[in-house]
Length: 368
Figure 1: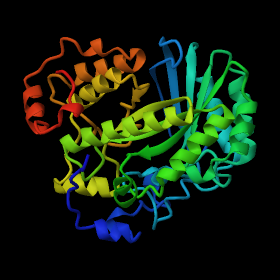
Figure 2: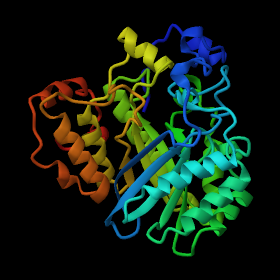
Figure 3: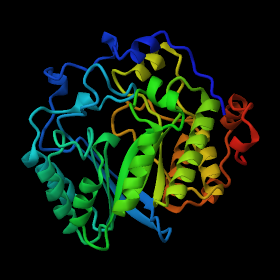
């Protein structure tokens, strides 16, 4: 499916990897960005569907504060991400250990799935030292209720040796997952607009390494990244799910898809477009539609509905009357995979949404 992109005056600058001053990170020496190196940047708890038996289990996601993502060096960097603004210099093994131990002390008694995220790549030695990776797995191995652990990394830092080393420190009844920010199946959107620096070949390689290591592959896919309107945002998300599912099945790797509905982050091209009125926030009805399509195609999916306290509430919504009900239904779908969670949902604003996606081809439509 061909997707129309919104023209960008600043796109050529970003393609040339020159970031205009208005898109650059906040000065990390300012008092507004002084953070505690002993506390995680973000922690949240919710429910997720167990991959094997379909039951709802408790999920904890923590983003540890690190020195930041090496890809975001002020010249390169993903155009929708502001993680570097939350980094702290000098974070090493001791600080990371303190952060993780504090998170673990706050675990609910029944946590079964833990996502150990950072402000960059878990397998980049300069961001997350090898010694901490081993120590982290030892800490999580000692938590009897945890059955699965997710870490994430850019593709260039993933190899068989690193995956095997980390997985070997987990218990036999624990599963390791590797998350990769694929974002879109459209390589032009992924690399020219979002500036991920990730080829299709690299996605395949990481899947193949995960299969060999016995690690579950998790693809992060954005829903309505900048330059896409509502209709094309749905098309891109469905195409991405189809591509990941087919590729994973052809390789034989266990997988799931983590859809990430886009929210507005600070100091980014995305925020600039939002402020100028050229980007409109994703409608929750589009997520409902995508969830129904995913269920119909039997994709193992999860929708990340938290903005990680990064958006100032500039996140997907519908209208004040139904936003809370739709969010609750999407969260229930996350824990069950059952599209009947959306039965009976209705609001006058749905008709407005339907008009915005009226030109969707039939294969991208769900029953509403």
